[in-house]
Length: 142
Image (cartoon, rainbow, N blue to C red):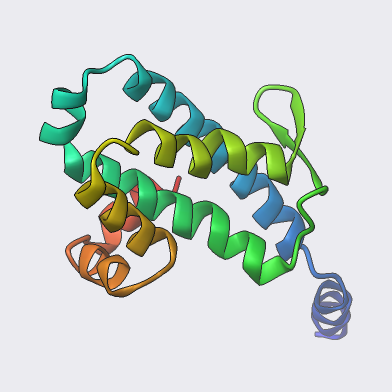
């Protein structure tokens, strides 16, 4: 009993959440970079026909990257390690994810507006998110 209380007090003293969030952010950046590399090779018609995938990628950027950065107050100069062993700053990671996503679709005004709304957590974000099940959210954010 005394040992459990002591362990709980010691563990409560340490906050591992920012480190875990940083690792999860790095993993999400790596995943989105791979997704966007695949999209860059696709035609505009393919991207237009698969706009739901673009909106999902924007949602993943918002929840898996931007929300964590905002929650933890990380500086753009914060170092992050992308799997397997690539050292970059958060600013570089944002360029390779959020900015690259916007550049891929910049020719389509309607899609660009929808992506911006999701990234800015506007009404479109909540509309898109309500169509995802909890299992889908969990799976997409792994």
